[in-house]
Structure formats: structure tokens, C-alpha cells
Image 1 (cartoon, rainbow, N blue to C red):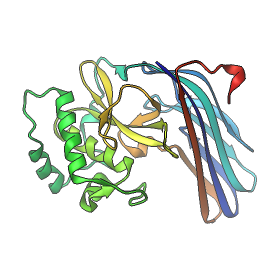
Image 2 (cartoon, one colour; image 1 turned 180 degrees about the vertical axis):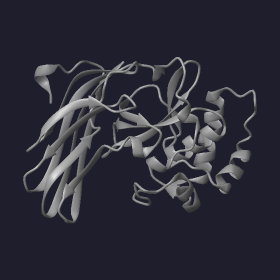
Image 3 (cartoon, rainbow, N blue to C red; image 1 turned 30 degrees about the horizontal axis):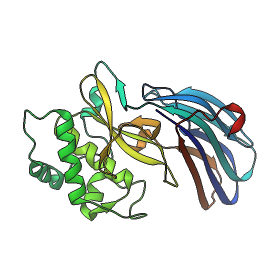
Image 4 (cartoon, helix red, strand yellow; image 1 turned 120 degrees about the vertical axis):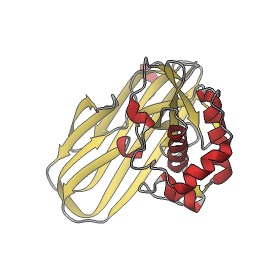
Length: 268
């Protein structure tokens, strides 16, 4: 069992002031069987936040900043107790995790390559996912800034490179084609300067985690913020505003892992 502290900030600077800014945030972890949130806070200067949950059960903060402003900054921090096993009990997966979504729609190349994974009918979901991870690693190279948030699994595969989002989308697409329910997950891990994406797949009455970017099944060390069909359901910050302005985005993340509880009076 580990304790993880995190400090995460998103700052958007606008070239010209904007107003009537409405936003939705998924930047705070919530309790589940793999993690217990010891403490957390989320703040946006200039705006009042309302807590709630989205249709997937993810914790969200919504708010509005009506007056003119030329910057927008989200600050979130906290401490999470991480269990030794990443398994989320669920009596039955939602069937939507078996069907293609906007980012995971398969094309002819993806369907053909799936045949090379040598999946057998008797293979357990864990074995299927292991074979598919090997296929992802064979077909894709990691290349920072090589894709955008709009890149689909098929487009990334055509390029043969991508980032964690693309690795996750491709694994999800192949898992669903192979009959294994799979969903997109996003959160924090140590050593990353931004959020990280991985995959949850359904196996024996629960969801397990696998990280195709690092080619490993997940035991502990991952702070989950949200899950959904794909990136579209898990965006960290989404909003609309009035005014036309170029934007500059700055993101900072620090994650510390330890084997003991830091305590309320000693940290963030």
C-alpha cells in the first residue's frame, strides 16, 4: 500500500480578454476500490465551483467566470491512499464498452492486424489483453507531441507513432474487436509532467488496469481521475467562452509516492 501526493495546475493565457466563460473539470480523484482519497481540493481563482458527477460516475467541478479575464488557472492537490491491487468490482460491464466509439472506430488495417495477435477462443481476457499489448508495442512507437487530442486510433496506427492517449485508444479498439470490454482511463502517475492515459478491461467480475504505453499490467501507483469510452468522455478541462483569442496552455504536475501517510498538517 502506498500514499501518493499530487499537485496539478492548468493555466490558460488568452491573447485578449474573454468573458462568459463556462467550464467543466475532471481533475480530482474520487474513491474506488483501488484508491482512497485522504484529502483533496480544487480551486479556480475568480470562479465559484460546484461539485457533481458525470454520467460515468466521475467527479466533476463546474463553474462560470462571467466577467472579462485574460487568464484562467485551475489548481488541484491532495493525497491518495493506493491499494496494492488495481481491481474495481463490477457485477457486469456496461455493453457500451464493447462497441466502437468516436476515437476507437476500427478500420481495415486494424481488423487485419488483429488476426496476427494469435488470439484463441479459450484465451482468458487477461491473456487476450497481453497479446494485444504486444501488438500495440509492435506497431507503435512512442513519440512526444506527434499527435493531437483529435487523433483517432486508426490515424495513429497509420502513422505508427503516438502518445499515451493513442496507445490506449488502439488497445481499446482491438480489445473490443476481440470481445473484451475495455474503457479509457486518465489520471496521474509518478514521473510524468502531465496526465497519463491507460486502459481498464473487464475480467472476472471486475475491471483491471493495463498501461499499454509502458507495456504492463497495473498493480498500484496510478491515481485515477476519470474513465469513459475514450478521450472524449475524460477530458480534464472543457469550456466555452465569449470572445476570440489565441490561447497558451501551461501544465504542471508533481506526484510523490511514499509508504506512509503524510498527514493533514504537513502537505498541500
